Length: 325
Image (cartoon, rainbow, N blue to C red):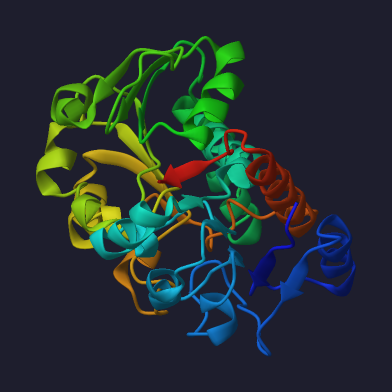
């Protein structure tokens, strides 16, 4: 077995870096002087990346194109929009290169976040907390009248990958009626799954619309005024995907008219929202600062996920979370 060169620009603590080093025993690990500090931003161009066999982290897209030896690019994010380009696909294809995301690392956390959003809405927990922080008026009757059950509700999951599958598992005890939409239904999803072309037809049937779509050019503004109009009055939107998939002014308008009962957003466009952005004050708009994927042990799991795929790659086995190639 020949020794490979692994380029890593993922931001890791010393203990995690040691974990990675031990897992790559017998292979060469190289890092830039300044590692990437966020999954949302690629690192800068690095000659060490272009000379490597494998890249782990958020490599510069130009390095992937130029790195003729690069065969496995293991991302530290569930999203991969900046890498999903014809230029990168065309560069990887002749060398048999593949790109893997880290969706499995974030599936539990993002699904938990979405479920927490849904339960908070049904049980009106946010309104109760806001009252505690402000007026402290004990609004029992008003909140009880607005409480709902998640049981037997109709849930539309738009963008059905690893996170959507995990959310489906978490919703099963509530006996929710789930329909999923994805670009290419496979038939093995375990819930009725339709192509994205059915979006408008399905929006009018849902109580809860969970947006898990990636931020690629094709999805920009896919939730706009016409999509909100297609929803039944009182529908709730949850966005755990990317902020660019939602037309922010159209969302604000749907909330202000009351057509949308509420929106729960973990992602926005732009990020972070400027303090004066109107979504902060839109009625029943509840925002978390892109924390859905975070949890204690996140980066240990990143290293484990990469090492598992590294060994699969070395043994010629199918790779987890393969998204390109």
